[in-house]
Every structure is written in structure tokens, then in C-alpha cells.
Image (cartoon, rainbow, N blue to C red; front, side, top):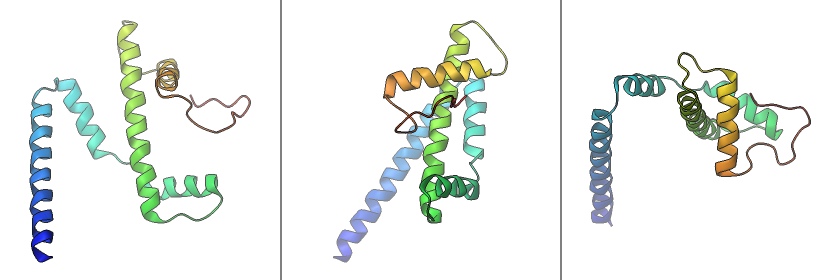
Length: 130
């Protein structure tokens, strides 16, 4: 049994090393603008307590900190996907500068078309995300 644990540990170390190598190769091919956005993405996190409060209000009962951290992680990925789609919308239109709410709305609409229904099970009248 201890041999198995050592094997698992070395496999995990190998996977982590390979992941770091893959990330380095990817980052070597970033444009300076992509690199700056990636660094900003890595540095920032959604406030765990605020996420926990929103989840608790939505569910109507207490949630643990690890659950709030998981939701915050998924939320960060979602926001990243919407921003990337909004950048593509902006580029397709030939516009530059900061993203506008219109870019975000179209990106969210495209996201819904690609992934299916997002949000509440029953739509709330006159409720807009962006």
C-alpha cells in the first residue's frame, strides 16, 4: 500500500511538471496584449465572501467556504469566456478600446447559442444580465 501511495505522488508530480511546461509553451506564443490579459486574469479573483453571500441568497441556506470557492472559480472562468467572446465581437466589428455593454450582450447571446440555456430555469420577465 505505501508503494501505491508513492506511485500516486510521483504521478501527480509528473503531471504538475508537464502542466507547467505546457503553460510555458502556451505563454511563449502569446502576443503582448494576450500576455497582459492573462497576467491580469491570474492576479484577480472574485471575493469569496461576496460569492458565498450570493450563493446563500440564491439557494436559501448556508454554504461552506469550499463550495463558495468552487463557485468563484467557475464564475471566473465564465467571465473570462464572456470577455474573450466580447473581444472577438469587438474585433469583428472593427472597433477598438474598452468593451461596451453591447459587446458583452452579444457575447452572452453567442455563449447561450453555443452552450444552450444559461441562468434561471424559468426566465424572469424584464431581467437582463447585461
